[in-house]
Length: 93
Image 1 (cartoon, rainbow, N blue to C red):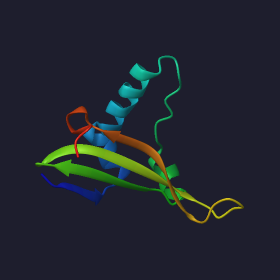
Image 2: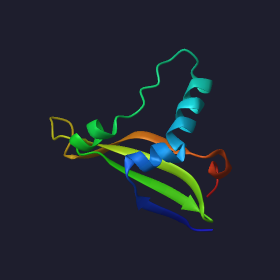
Image 3: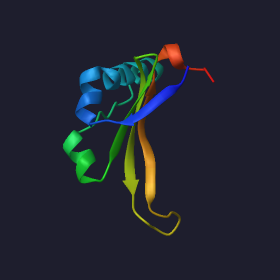
């Protein structure tokens, strides 16, 4: 079963409940630790990017990327900011 990964607006990821599921998963794994959430305007202003993954017409996961700036130890590009893969799709290859 192929997985499709497409660009998505961060508001769509929030509306889908994926980021809330990520926050709940993080809180369960790391009780008492802060969960930072995401501010769509801040992500866009920083040049961030978001994608959504689907498989068999079901949402499988999402990823937010932050743009990095060139520096001494890195070139310009991006870093993973927040990633979530639904339990049904974890561990599959």
